[in-house]
Amino acid sequence: MTGDDEQDEFEESQVVAGMTGDDADVETSLRPKSLTDFIGQPRVREQLQLVLTGAKLRGGTPDHILMSGPPGLGKTSMAMIIAQELGTSLRLTSGPALERAGDLAAMLSNLVEGDVLFIDEIHRIARPAEEMLYLAMEDFRVDVIVGKGPGATSIPLEVAPFTLVGATTRSGALTGPLRDRFGFVAHMDFYEPEELERILLRSAGILGVPIDKDGCAEIAGRSRGTPRIANRLLRRVRDYAEVRGDGTVTKDTAKAALVVYDVDQLGLDRLDRAVLSALIRSFGGGPVGVSTLAVAVGEEPATVEEVCEPFLVRAGMVARTPRGRVATAAAWQHLGLVPPPDLAIGGISVRTNESQQGLFE
Image (cartoon, rainbow, N blue to C red; front, side, top):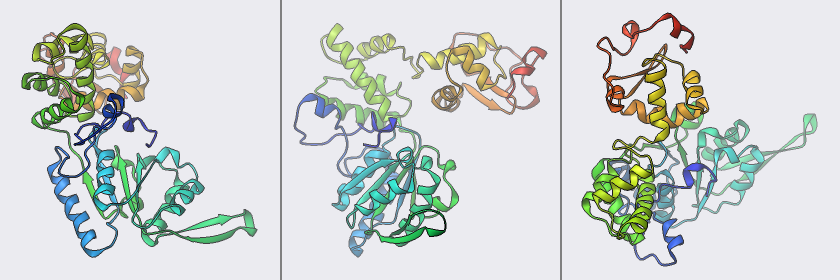
């Protein structure tokens, strides 16, 4: 595993048929083994199938593959599928783990022809390692520098032909030279509720959780379009059903369980609602800078910006303006409040006052 947070949860979104082992093994192995088992992302699956089949027909290795998209959508599972479809081994690492060029050289030198090298969060790879990766991706060789100063010597090291699969949650953070060396770039989108329901039904079957269609729909509707979250909520609802119910996940059971776990009908959790509440009740709906907002909820600015904001913006509850974050009418209504009649988002029409000027960022 990569050691990054993205490895811990998702991509446990699909079903592996014929699996054996105890419950703990099953819970950490809800991954698809082939493209046909993978639920959702139909366009990416079709494109990837062509890339892999074409390479197998030619008897060569596929082009390097870059997968981008928010966390929890199946990038790691897709890398595992690529290796499975090619019948080769998968080597996993992460960008932050490759701090020095020597770390990458050691990994590349151990590859066997046809291996798939998966680098999670590839945009965080150290610059020296990234520059070494350029040559490895194009010419399947690396130059190892021995010594320092005028006496340094460059030793060329051949690398077996391999396929690099990179995953990133921030494709814009990739350097141009690295991004251009990928022959196929796939962007993974959020899942539709119907797809999440299918994932939940199959995952429940693997976990042995009795669940009805309405229960699936209730959990799917609160999963933010993300299989990782859907499976996590399924496990928590299962706990509630087994402890306080008859073990069956129904719509009412799912609702009651998610109230206990502070997940509302739109999928907002405690921190999301705290951000909205502070934005509206403490700062009159904004604009307010993210640093000030983070202090108000007792979190780091990076947590608010990277964990809460993406979904709140996508849900149409927060707008990012040049002067700061602004709560939309939907945010006021979600908290049971009446938005002010002069509320407008963006530009000069946003309500401001002198006391807020210092909050803009």
